[in-house]
Length: 156
Ligand SMILES: NC(=O)c1ccc[n+]([C@@H]2O[C@H](COP(=O)([O-])OP(=O)(O)OC[C@H]3O[C@@H](n4cnc5c(N)ncnc54)[C@H](OP(=O)(O)O)[C@@H]3O)[C@@H](O)[C@H]2O)c1
Image 1 (cartoon, protein in one colour):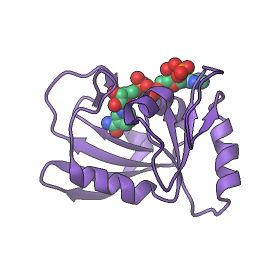
Image 2 (tube, protein in one colour):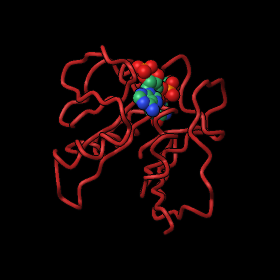
Image 3 (spheres, rainbow, N blue to C red):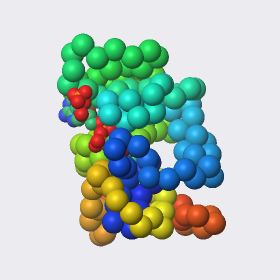
């Protein structure tokens, strides 16, 4: 899972991101390129196109939904089957890229969270689910001028 959030878990407003952080977008590109990314239909609409050099999976209940260069699924579990077809290496990751509904659905399956913490003070209407602190350990932490980038791993 990869997410950028404010201190209260804020991730979006009016189907848009809350900030523009070019260093964070670079991190996002580096982490997701060559992998499978899974997003909700609203996040797909917000981005407006498939992300290049990644296998894009979009989750929707709309049986008529169409989009170029993406795989459309109606059942969250289908993402795992599609990811295996794309790349069966154990090193490869399926990355959940949001938004709020999609993070909530997949959180129980997630082993690693790439977490950007932004010092944001303002409105939001989309939030990352609360993490149970004992379930996660921080394995790296890097400070950038506008945000902190952490990697959390699931405690088994
Ligand atoms: N800060 C970040 O890192 C980050 C990352 C990504 C997104 N965001 C922000 O998050 C916000 C969007 O989040 P959101 O929660 O509103 O939308 P979302 O999670 O992107 O998409 C929700 C949609 O997913 C589909 N869906 C949900 N559960 C489903 C299920 N069980 N089966 C089939 N389809 C299902 C539905 O699509 P249909 O309505 O088509 O059926 C639903 O409307 C935006 O503001 C965006 O900018 C922030």
